[in-house]
Amino acid sequence: MASASASSAIGRSPIAVSKPPPSPRTFHLVNYGCPKNLVDGEGIAANLLAAGLQPAGPDDADLLIVNTCGFIGPAEEESTNALADFARDKHEGQRLIAAGCLSERRGAGLARSIPGIDGVLGTRRWSEITNLVQSLSSTPHPALLGPSPTAPDPNQRLVAGPSAYVKIADGCNKNCSFCTIPSFKGRQISKTPEAILSELDTLAGRGVREAVLVAQELGSYGVDLPSVDLDLIGLLHAIQEAPGPDWIRLMYLYPSMLTPRLLDTIAASPRICNYIDVPIQHSVPAVLRRMRRPTGSADIANRIHEAREHHPDFAFRTTLIVGFPGETDDDFTDLCGFVENAAFDHLGVFTYSPEDGTPAASLPDQIDPAVRDRRYAAIMEIQQGVALSRRLARVGAEIEVLVEETLPGPTLAGHQSIGRGRAEAPEVDGRVFLDLPLLPGQIVRAEVSGTEPYDLFANVTAAPDGPLKLASEPAVSTEIPA
Image (tube, rainbow, N blue to C red; front, side, top):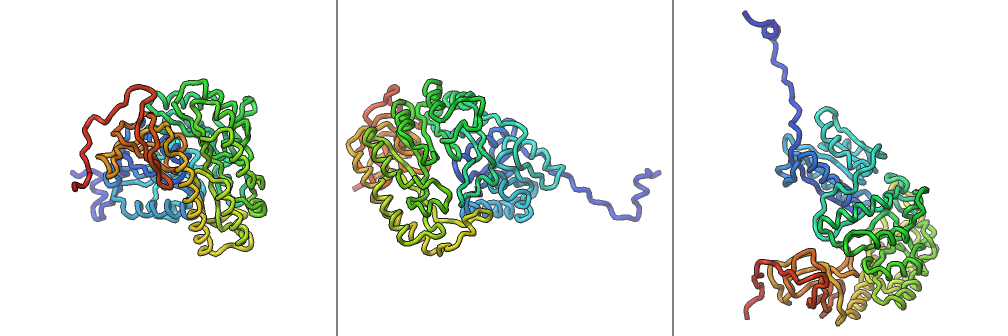
């Protein structure tokens, strides 16, 4: 006798019941954007590892994560294209998560605009990645956006290499007319000094030799911590006295914070690199007013020259925007003269990108994109000459170098490893090519023997922290025989 359930199905087609895919066991993470985004990506990876997931290639991973950037149009386009490519190519059972700044900026609508995105994770809730993964099987297109109810653990990061970024604050209280960041990052939230010192100590224990302090604007550190009478300089003093990486570097400082007191604090510390990144954006007061930036940025060149009189080895980086609405030919000529006069060691240039929701996007006198591109090329050509001049002045000097990479064999010029000096920040500045096959993570002394506009060549003279550690395997020469 047939069971009741079987007899009730006679004469009807069987109903297909789709089973949710099994819980992911592997993941593949791609990071886009700035160092602050990379820090979040390292946290995402560490949380997934702690949950038992293992990294894998894009074809083999159960979970695909794109940690996006949404700062300006080209960055948004790059992240959007990556998401679309993964969405198009993912195979059955794979799930795709859009994380990071673009997700926070565009919200849940990002999944509607790119079919194939399974979940959305905002930049302020990256530490809840495992919660989002768990909800994928029960909730269509889950999205975790906005402020997080819990503070992430800054020590839970997957860090590789001798350098690491340390985010001392997130969000921004400034009101630049071209910038979208405050709209989706919110107001600044500073980490407590105790959390920062703990993170630095943990990183040093993992072999990190250099910590790069980052925030949307370092100089405002601590203003939102009313119970803590501590500013950036006070934090630097605390860092100097506490355990942590050998080198400390500062990036993203508002121009008004470039004070003699800060410069003297940096110069007096054997650990803090004589290096500061001060994005000024422009030199013409009228343009700066339209940008809602401090018009005193035009005086930065004088401050740099004064600083170099007391500390000749100080390195300065800045960022400029060309083609901002209303920028005249005379304005651009002024900016070119400023770049030659200030003699920045490192310079990044953006062509202006009108971003929806920003005041600058609706300003009159928008500049033709072709003009923006020409101005970009012209100012980079000027900076190339400036950079070469700055580096030629270092030939013959002895510098400290943090080794980052061992080359598989000597180059035609005999270089066998690559590193950076105290005057070069990771990823954005030039490198130092060394004559010995050194292991990554060493700090050595080397004499500069030659230069190109952005890179230096040097011969190793000593290792101040112990004996030189050469790569264990002898390098195979790549010299072309005569």
